[in-house]
Image (cartoon, rainbow, N blue to C red; front, side, top):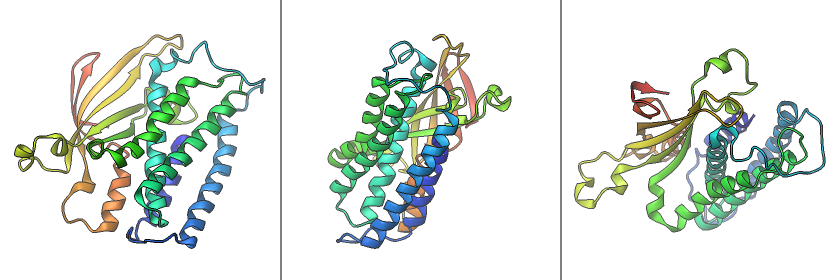
Length: 279
């Protein structure tokens, strides 16, 4: 389900980013477009989540204390942080398109992301199979606040959180309703722009559109807290950093960079594996 929400948000962003961010006043029409799409997305998202996750018995509100920090080797926490970062980033851009200054736009993006994620967490609290998770709330907060921190601390703009998918055998065999629920199929990435992080004396030798990323996934989960962490080092294509791109194309590439594109990589845990392309 969250994958569908991500796609919907990204499509809304891509369609709207064709205009340059040069407005100095709030544009009511643009605000209406974003607000309408957001409310519609929340309504549709609730229906889909209710069908996928919340069909089971409804119980009094409770906090998950039994599985919160053992489920999927905590890969779900990376997922919460990554999705919150994506939503906060995209909505921050949309608020800028609506005419807000960059600081206010970043905080509005944080607010929208946390509102949606907290709503899901509270609803989980009434589900027998899930329960409210303080760990999830913490991960959501870290992801959602990162774009705000990037606004105030320029050096943080060299990093991004990303996601990618490659279907596992279990997913292909129908073990999961949505690929985002299969943490073996999912890799969460921390992307870094080497050009920006390098000393100025060597920046001229580093193309700004190639970065590196470290990815985390899991495998051989047994449902009881067992399994293996998978850690991968990869190149990262940062196409929005290609010089002289038209502004509208740069905006699209910036949104697409939230998804980690296939690139040469090496798995370093639990064993070494070289990939011509790692998806």
